[in-house]
Amino acid sequence: MKTLHGTILIADDDVDIRDILKDTLKSLGGTIVTAANGEECLDRVEASGPDLILLDIEMPIMNGLDVLKALKQRGNNAAVIMITAYGTIERAVQAMKQGAYDFITKPFDLDHITLTVEKALERERLKRGLESFAVEAAERYRLIGGESAKMREAIETARKAAASKSTVLLLGESGTGKEVFARAIHNWSERKNEPFVAINCVGLSRDLLESELFGHERGAFTGASRFKKGKMELAHRGTVFLDEVGDISAELQTKLLRFLQEREFERVGGTQPIPVDVRVIAATNRDLSSAIKAGRFREDLYYRLNVIPLQLPALRERKEDVPVLAQFFLRRFAGETKKNFSGIGKEAEEWLLAYDWPGNVRELANVIERAFVLGQGPEVTAHDLSPRTESPLTSRSTDELSYRHAIDTARAEVIRRALSSTQGNRAAAARVLGLHKTHLLNLMKSLQIE
Image (cartoon, rainbow, N blue to C red; front, side, top):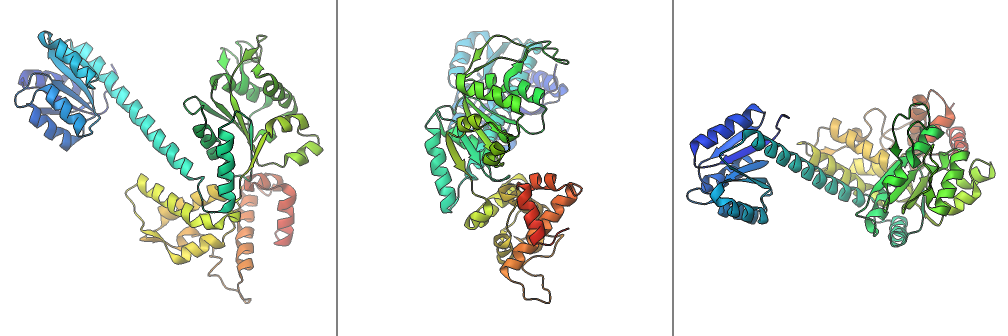
């Protein structure tokens, strides 16, 4: 038997039954609260907020059905298991129609009781997990909002694309929120109740990525000890999001092109075509036109993916959204802990607006999280935003500090950090920053970075 996790309220006017249930469930790890009548049960619910209620139908003052009705009226959604004698089973069935999870009968089979309680608690955990996921998803969709014209235009295009079945290609620098947009398009579409399956095309070998996309038969290659469905098959009737699609190998590009044309594939090691109905959304921060000219990306695949292109603006191109996003992240982190900030100070807001955000929204989220963790409050200060470097707004040299100088100072610092994290590898640093290598080299030259 598994260990029980959660608070369980036992409401029964028979003290012997209360004690038997209490001792049994407490021995399995549950936190137990008891009540001797219906009115006391409602009081205990308010005081302890139980995850599960074992509720006797026949109790003084208020019977179990009245208590169940009162719980629903108060908006309490704890799982309820009714306790009933054989003569009142019909009333227990009535209680289930009114929202009770299950019922148990007297005399008790303790093994049956513990199994029923275990399943009810597991159901509650799953339900809370789904509710939490729904809230998180809703919060993530809010990230694509904004006041800037470029963002409003991107959102309008995304909503129009969601109403179709066409393939969408999301373009933009790293950290601009391509996966958030992909999920929003899925959520706005007719496929919203079907799977959304994301796969990052970077960091996997060609064989592993092919297996992830299309699955494999048992024995298809060394280590393939069992049959596996791929993401395309798992996403049937839903949406597949291919992140960093510009990085896939030439051979896999050919197989992806065939899939987009035929809407069917074969598993690795298989010979049977498998048709699926999926909507494909792809994303890249690479310049695919240059990759096509260099022979690294198939032109026909590009046209298959680029049915509806959607360019996501960099954060530096929509500075008016920075304070709004910063406040959003601050509220999110405050909601996850007991720590509280009243807002963002004036100097800190000026710092946020002056910075160029090469890491885009992802970098902004990280900076606000760091300020939230390390700051003392009551407001986020400019020092909280950049505790290890001198603020571009407050540092002074022999020359008068201009806005452009502040931006260049911030750019140079970010580039130096990227180069340091990649041991001086400029190509790797460019990928970290979401820049083309040529652009990075030009920036290093202009900023006099060795």
